[in-house]
Image (cartoon, rainbow, N blue to C red; front, side, top):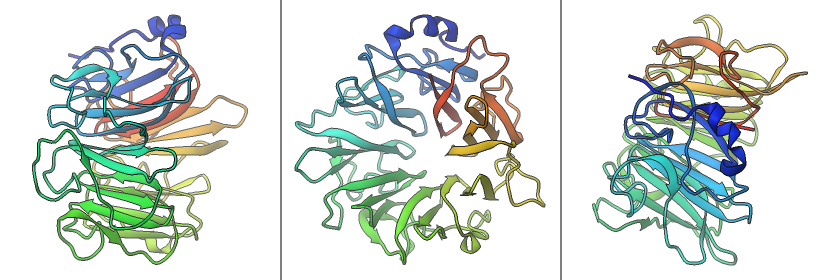
Length: 381
């Protein structure tokens, strides 16, 4: 049985109370879509917020297996952490006893510090806290199955853990998590990682890394992305470096790429954006490469400028600025939970437009996109 949660039209009519219009689709067994139900949603439904302050905007969103974190900025410029879904492993802080089917604040009680960056692995959450005049602080919450917490192998019941990084930088500038490994960048330069690394996704040696270690890289890092067992680094030169497993050919051909401006990873695939073309490599069992076997590039619509790529576990969303038109979101890949919002559960092997949908009761302009484990998210204005 599937339900769509609150009707989108109802939310639009009360937008002056909600302020943020965020829609989601896909897997929802623990309420991680925040649509008021615990049923999968095969079409995009409006998310519900509990006592949302006025004038908020979304800074970032990330997803674990069954939980979602949302970083908001209020109209007063204050950063707040919100969450929904399953928090029984502690991934949503100490106040979460039962799963929540709506977004509500995550209380960290860190005097003087505010959340700046967020990420999530399977059942673990990561938050970078910032305070004027102080070094950034990185905390972890939740499960520690493969050293995910970054504090050793202890299974302490402490509400959250401070992750000690092996470098002297002041500012944490990037943070991304895969299924069970994490990489963070300090002062825009040094990379540090921890978690599962038996395939070398955190460099050498290949082993579990329960305490953060420095990842040695030749070249300056522009951005990076993490899959289940691999890590992809985009250098400022436009070249790409791959670490970890190539069992599904998720690193195939990356070393020959140049002039790359964006990278993304599904669990077993890699996506390198060159101009407005997307080179995809890796597993194609669910259509997640979005192309024919003889063409290395995803076939995309004409007169569309790629603004952002969002990779879920095995599906992909792409946000486009359209020449003489409104922004559009296209998607492809694994769709077992209806996570592409098309009203079906059939996998999609080539890109299709998923927003705006002609069949939707109302629509709006897509501002940003995110994807998680069988889930998709669109911020609409």
